[in-house]
Length: 88
Image 1 (cartoon, helix red, strand yellow):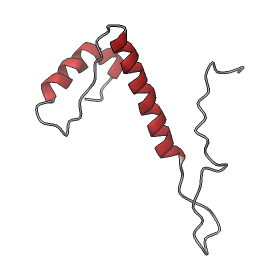
Image 2 (tube, one colour; image 1 turned 120 degrees about the horizontal axis):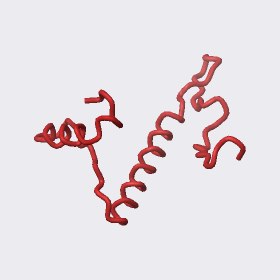
Image 3 (tube, helix red, strand yellow; image 1 turned 180 degrees about the horizontal axis):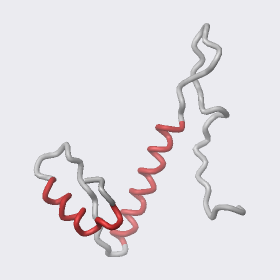
Image 4 (cartoon, one colour; image 1 turned 30 degrees about the horizontal axis):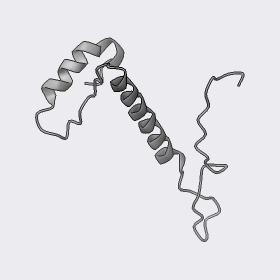
C-alpha cells in the first residue's frame, strides 16, 4: 500500500516453477508468463468495454495475420504514433 495504489496478485507459487521432473533437482514450468498475459488482456478488454460504454472510440490495432488490416492499422499508428513509438 505504500508504493502502489493497486497490486495484481497472480497467485503464483513461490519460485514460479510448477513441474518437477524425476531426476532433475529444480522445478520448471513457470506459470507467471501465461497468467500475466491473461491478466493483462482481461484488463485491456475491461478498459475497452468501459470506454465503449462511456461513448469513446476504442482504437484497436488488428492482427496483421488478417487480410486487409494494413491501412486501418497504419491510420491508427499515425493518430497515436507519439504513444506507440516505432512498433509498426
